[in-house]
Image (cartoon, rainbow, N blue to C red; front, top):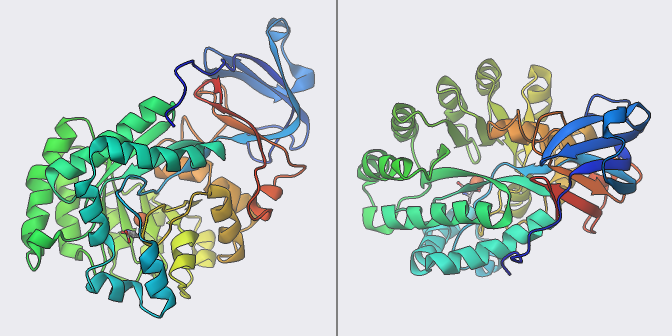
Length: 409
Ligand code: DI6
Ligand code: FE
């Protein structure tokens, strides 16, 4: 269902009866807090007792004792695609590996077929339903990748849908061009030629149309080589576009070091990340994006090097990696839970991973994933006693109110 034509009510005014989650804003955790919203921006945040007199006359919104966090940020999704792949789930249950499914003509390429067959409106409708689920759980900014079109017109279609979703739903959408996701069937055996097409035709055309906020590559032995990845990065750099990488998911390709040399926003998956990769990411300020939904779905057993990332001080984000093959996940809170349970993140790390650090992975650290004066009002009120509950419950709907782009949703 597209959002109703009547706009949601404004969140302008004073929000009281709140507790701020630890780390959400510079205030003693748990103290009674207030947030002042004016013209869609946060004008003031602090202890309710310190509310400046100038704000006292404003309309009040009662938080009812809820816990407030910044709006959630889902920093790695493949949300726009045709069809779904439940049958592959069954194949894998019967013993096939992800790589075997891909080599047998399933996998990414089957979603490419369905995406090419779908109209822009079909893609909008199916992605909108998924987006609504994520938004209802408190997502206020989301990254959406292309990569199921693998030809100019179909990549364009996916990215246009991503932009339209952002406008229709009033949510910050960052688009990522992932033309180098898989080899389209018409380029079988001609990976280098396809890489040229991505760099020389698709990327410049889509960038000129304002459809690309960042560029990504699936650098893996079943996808693109390190050399091809670097060609894509060089093309991105020439267009002034930031890069990120699907790195070291199934094997250590040295992708993280390459990405760091190009100042990548993030390296994602990174189950097989080496110490050299960690050092390079630390030096370049690249965020480590952890994707426990894919790890879980693939029944992976090779854990990302969490302790080493933590020791190096590399910021860790957590995301759904929503995609029809390896992570058909529509709950960022469930990912926070799995980041704790499977990857041994602490609760504060997991919550920073779906807010502050996720925003950084999108280059949005100054405007999203935080409750601070001057930023757009994106925050969530939760019916929980303590922040740990956000990573603790498996399922459930702890949201009380979402304020997104200054409106009460
Ligand atoms: N890594 C992933 O986990 C997804 N893409 C990627 O580069 C999987 C995409 C799919 O199987 O459709
Ligand atoms: Fe992915």
